[in-house]
Length: 104
Image (tube, rainbow, N blue to C red; front, side):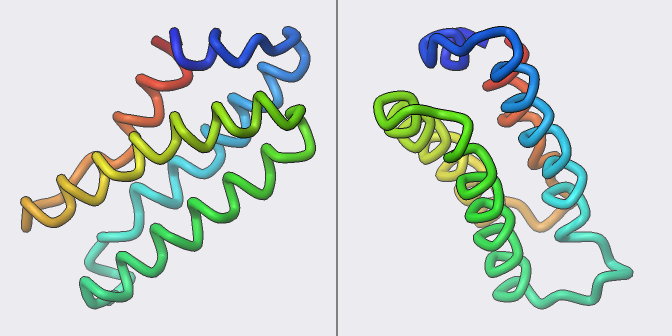
């Protein structure tokens, strides 16, 4: 929440921005589902694809300074997701970091 506030978004843009992140959380959460049958390498590739999708989707909403801040903030979140992914074999709640970023 605080990080999102630092982007200084208008209410309309903040809503769109938050929706993009929220829409992609489900996909992130499903990356390690057994029914997907992804190897760990494929799971990492999927997380990277989703991250690129998030970044390319929010870029048109933000000015250059806001986008730079977003990338910096999102990189910290993504690194935490990858750290947890590499530490744990059990199901990981990937979206938690994203929700904390947007709504806290």
